[in-house]
Image (cartoon, rainbow, N blue to C red; front, side, top):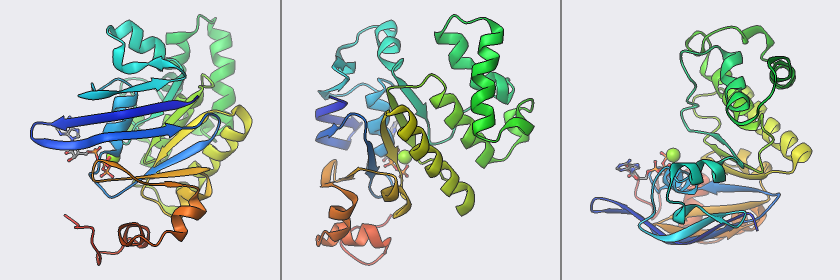
Length: 250
Ligand SMILES: Nc1ncnc2c1ncn2[C@@H]1O[C@H](COP(=O)(O)OP(=O)(O)OP(=O)(O)O)[C@@H](O)[C@H]1O
Ligand SMILES: [Mg+2]
């Protein structure tokens, strides 16, 4: 069942970003969402989470329709299944790294503080964050903040993990770490993963399916191998990261 996006359109003023886009994101697999900058990848993520409203169409997450959820409570209840890492790895600046990771646990589970500690500390160890646990987000590098964001996204063992550009601003070594982490956690917890990324081929290595957004719709969809073998000139240009070809670079 996973996530079903059906005929979704979204405009901002006169700019039509998504135009009748449909996509099935299968359960228990990792789906990469790729496409040139500005095509609406982050907008799609925010529509899935009910942060933006669709103009038309529907989006269901494990059978629950986010687009008809009318109250913030209903949306929060659907979102409870979802761990999210936003593009900016937004952390709460007034809380330590430890408290940032503990935040969703305290918000959604009624655990005693020693149980919270055990849960948070176990993921802190997994992600090599021990040394920074008591620091504030502004005191650590972006790569550490991304790992903290991943810890926070995964701490409730979500059914769905949505990750937007996990590596923007990271060096290649730390970048690979984030993908390894997504893959190993997926193998352990079996979540349905959605990874938005520009990084080809890195993102293909952790993905079971790839969907390329272009011109407001899913322009190509398949296994990473199928996408790589595609002969369409738009897809070939995008994969090569070339400025030469039919895609206009702004
Ligand atoms: N809140 C908003 N108000 C107005 N326009 C918006 C808003 N959010 C996104 N857009 C516009 O929608 C388009 C798609 O944006 P989006 O952030 O989804 O692109 P993207 O595919 O994620 O790009 P990138 O790869 O650079 O992250 C852009 O033209 C952007 O300016
Ligand atoms: Mg984006």
